Image (tube, rainbow, N blue to C red; front, side, top):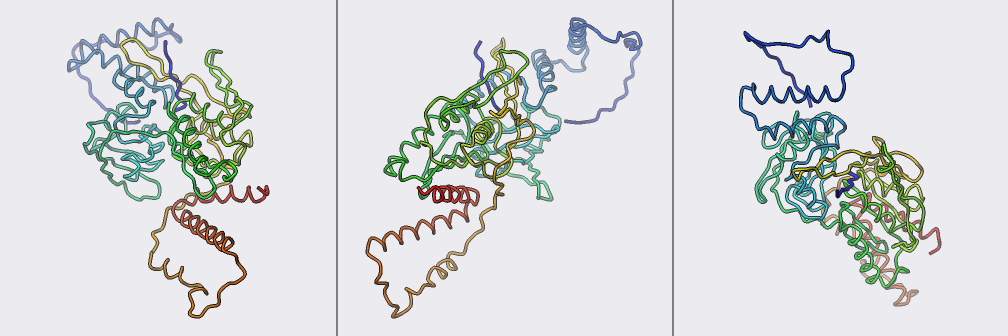
Length: 441
């Protein structure tokens, strides 16, 4: 049987019953403990009562699915039943293309909570943030729904609009966001160069992640003229909700020469494993800084935790989400599947991240960009001795030296601009530069 490993309510009821004929079991005569088979008989009896006596005719298959899902969601927020359609969509998700909004969600005390929006998706462009609570979908309350039911509400035809009611920390009132559904084509990893630092943005862990990284790094190194022209690497895992455990292990292995990456421990030996690195480092030993935040979950925490434990990278940002459990997707008869939590994972030092998260080595809070007045920037840029009428020329520099100074000034201006756009990434790049300077490279 094929398995996939994923390293990814309340209400009141009052009523009055009036009947001329009804029977209730005597609780006083019920034994303290009943066998599993007796409980299953009880389940069958209740199912038959509902099927035959409920006020409206019921869909028997839906009733059984609801019972199955009820068992699973009572275990933890990540175990659930996947009907055939949801299972099929999940398989497409791990391959990098699907339809929807582009958000990873979980459930917290009955509420639907955003783990993170995915880069470049409708949810991301609409401003949905990690930690947001979705309290209603097109006016229908999500409290009391299972996670699958809430997700089904958010699904719909590509091109159709959906209105989410959002509750967000630091916002006094709920507000609505209208999003147009789209086909989500995820590039799991994008690689670019900022100055002398290669920035690797990994937005999810699917079957494309390692290949995207490997190809991207090779292209950037070729464009830079070789690894000797690169100071270091930034691995950006912010708002990465996780994905395939196997891909997280492969990506971590790409930066380590040896040592344990992660271990999983379940109730049985079958669900307990250890994974170790193999020789080969895509960065060739250059410094690495890993960026994380509260939207970094599951598989991304495996990567950050392993690189931190091996002192292979400096972790910068804010504490991660704290999902330290492994879900196994088990296909069932009828083409559906169950997502069952089968193990906890542990970093190489033996720590569990469950409900704790990865603590960064250096805490850097994200500061939203502030709009800049271009006229004021231009005015400040003109305030220079060289712009004064009759200013003396500098005769101590050769043309090569002058060109080098201009290149350095351009690099500093680009770095200053980045600070205004993404202060966490700018800090990471400055840290790489500092490490390189101190090492005398």
